Amino acid sequence: MTASAVKHDVFQAIADPTRRQVLKLLSEKDMPISEISRQFPVSRTAIVKHLQVLSEARLVTAKKTGREKIFSLQPEPLAEVQAWISYYEQFWHNKLSVLKHLIEEE
Image (tube, rainbow, N blue to C red; front, top):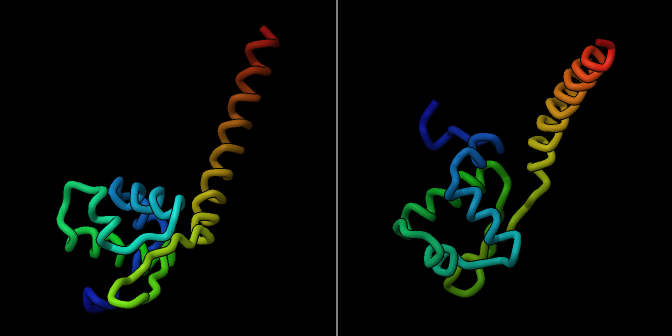
């Protein structure tokens, strides 16, 4: 499989703090690359690469407007993360309930 054929899943996409910050910015409003780039101390090229990972994970979409690409947040794939977290929340809730029960019995 070539490097260009590799797609990123939502977990890989949100693993990076810069990408999480990009998602936060896009949750506030749609933005062109130039505006997103101004928010970070890294090159525009680095931001483009981050946006590509987010796009491959279907967390952002881009629409060409004139000479610019405007990026928009697509939060639906984050439901997979929420489902994963919910499972472990229930797991810990159950464990803590058992612990509480054991402590109260003593």
